[in-house]
Amino acid sequence: MHLLSKIAATLALSASLAGGMTTLAQAQAKTDFKVAWSIYVGWMPWGYASDTGIVKKWADKYGITIEVTQFNDYVESMNQYTAGAFDAVTLTNMDGLSIPAAGGVDTTAVIIGDFSNGNDAVILKDKTSLADIKGQPVNLVEFSVSHYLLARALESAGMSERDVNVVNTSDPDMVGAFQTADVTAMVTWNPMVSEILALPGATNVFDSTKIPGEIIDMMVANTDVLKDNPNFGKALAGIWYDTMAAMTADTPEGAAARTAMGVASGTDQAGFEAQLAATKLFDKPADAVAFTSSPDLATTMDKVRTFLFDKGLLGSGAPSADIIGIELPDGKVLGDSANVKLRFTDEYMAAAAAGSL
Image (tube, rainbow, N blue to C red; front, side):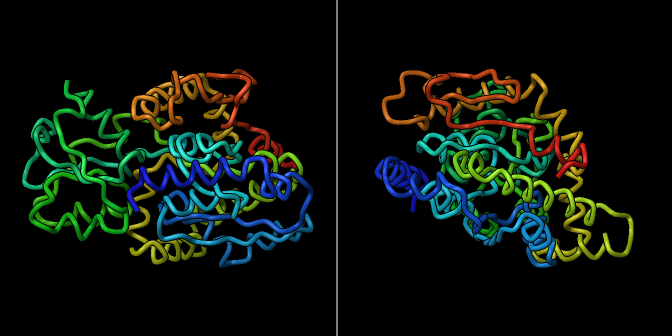
C-alpha cells in the first residue's frame, strides 16, 4: 500500500476507535504488554534482548509479561501500534508525530536511543555531487525521515522538491530497486545504505551527519498505558540499558552481541559496527537525559512539524503546524496545549541514570 494511503487508513481507524473499546481496554492497569520493532541498527537491541532473556528478566522483576515482535515493514509496525494492537513501538521523532500522534493516539517517548549520524543518506548512481540530483527521479519511502532528509539536502543546495520527482518505494525493495536501470537516485537508511553503497556507481552525496540530532530513534509507548502501568516504562528502560551494556562491552561477550545483531540485520559484526559508527548511540542514560532536556530538541521538533504540515500530514484541514501539541520534558508545549499527542519525557531514563529502576 502507498504510504499516504496507509496513513489515511490509520487515521480513519484511529478515529473510529478513539472513543471505543480500544481506549477503554488500554486505559487500565494490566500485566501483559506487546512491543513492536523493525530492522534498523538502533533498534536491533530489542530483538537481541528478547532472544537472550533480558526482556524476560525485567518483565519478571515487575511481575509483567512483555512480548516483543519484529516487523519487516517499518510502516506496518507503526500502523499496528496506532491501531491499538501494540503498547509500544520503535520509531523516529518525525514518524511518531505524523502517524500515531496525528492519528489521535497520545504517545510518549520513553527512551531516546540514538540519533542518525550518517545512517540515512542521499545516494546517486554514476554521479558524485548533490547538485546532480536536479531533474532526477528520487526513490524513497514517501513522507518518512528519508523524505525529510531529501528536503533538508535540497534546501542546503538551494533547491526544493520541485526540482526532483519523488518515487515512493517500500524499504524492503530499496536494494533491488537501485540495481535497476530506471533508478538513479535514492534516499534510505541502514542497513540498506551500506548495501547500496557497496554497489557499482553508488555515491553518498548527503547524509544525516549534515543535520545532527534531527533524526531521532526512539521507543515510544501509548501514554494512557504508560500512565496506568509505570512499571512497563521502567522495564523498557531496564531492558534498554542492560542491552546497551552488553553490546558496547569491549569483551568477547560484547563482540558476540554485536555479531548476533549484525546477523539478525543481514550483515556481520563488522557491518553492524560500521552502522554503529554512523549512529550517535545513547548507551548511557545520563547522556540520553542531557540530549532530551536540551533546548535543541524544541528547535528540531519545530523543523519537523513544519515539514509535516507542509506535506499535509498533520491531519486533513490542519490550519497550521500548531494543531498538535508536542510536550517537552520541562512541560513546555509546542503547538496546541489542549491537544498534546506527542510527549518527550526523561523520567525513565533519569531513573536508570540514578540506579533507581
